Length: 230
Length: 401
Image (cartoon, rainbow over the protein chains, first blue to last red):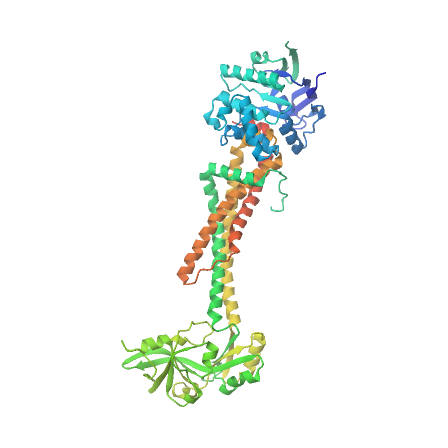
């Protein structure tokens, strides 16, 4: 039996003023099982980024429910949402978002600070995670000394350091050239298979999406297709 | 603003402080500018407190040799009387007649031309009794002081600076020398040691020639004492004693003026308090401006570090954690300003002490106060930027380029 990591149930999201809502998500429901490697594709404005933010507990839905690991999440409590985000989710962004002042391992160790891991345990854990993404020798470098692909791998290590249930990747290859992008996809795939990490990726690149196990197509705030690849 | 509930964060403080300093160092130029206001504010407050502290010590020092339990009663001419005078007998009987009085001495002081050899000088002249040295803590360097047996003699005791002036080159004035005053020749019987001048002294003893009060008629007209110095018991009620003594000495010739050492000290302190208040106001305004500077720099920091804030939120920082981070940074920034301000303030106090001829003295309680107040200002003015940071929308923050 497969375990649902993430469930969205009839999620709606409206922007704009009350009384003149601009609907962005119009009743989206799907389930991501443990160990899945799933892509959400759609053109700009289809609502995929908003969906990502709601799944990442960064934004509360206007209606509907989000369940993580079977438990309903009340995003209204900022402290609780932050704690769950830190513990159960890992983010990878298009722009990497590494802190330039910190070295690679310090960037990777940052989530451990908010997880109250004792200081002495953080560096070994961060260096071990960097080795996992093939950057063990770059632990002491600062982001500007690393290539784009290396920076994104540091960001991936940072997302993995607290062993989250789900990795949310927002256009993770958007700032990379095609060769590096391919390497990044292969790395994600390895982690998915090797460490059984569940991955939900948002992209506008259909070719990339077709290399995943499952592709959800979005258009105009609705799911218009859900394809599983063998 | 300080009553605002501080953010609930369980981030380790020491690590957060280290992190804050690293961040401030990374943008040191801007940090330095923000420090300036805090620095000036702390420096002026520290300087004010230290100078005030030193001034108070100096005031006390002025009265130390005299004691703070002194009264001076001075007779001013009343109505159409040519001069106000006191009754010598009443003054000298005060220790016996008033239980609050330890000692009392009558005197009359003026200044006149004193000659030694061919030279003349304008010096203080005072007619005094043998009890004066005890009340003014005078000590005789050479020779002896005036004693009751000298009452009918033409003898004088000379203050140390007066003695220097009256000396011939190579021949210092010593007991046995002669000085001329009002056509009389006085024999010098003693030279006094140097004594600090205080506000309550009826004359500048160092620059005076003292003669016996009994022989005052040769020099003074009328020859009666015009001033009384009274030493009260330490536990005496100064005001009540002053009123009783005035009543005892009251006569038709004089309006009596009573000055007490305590009143003078109080007056000096009150004057200093005005200066202190002025400096405190300058310090407070500087701190306010400095606080606004800190707020400005922190707000700029929040805007520039939107992505960092968003990222920290995404990886599990609570709003409290974010507020705490920026508050610690604002506090650290202001604290550095406070420490540098403390150093500048102490330097200013040191320079003031040198210029005024005071001995430098540091009030230890000033040391934590300067940087402490500065850090408090930093935290108070850092609250708004910190709250603003914690309310940023993480997604918008992460998307901002």
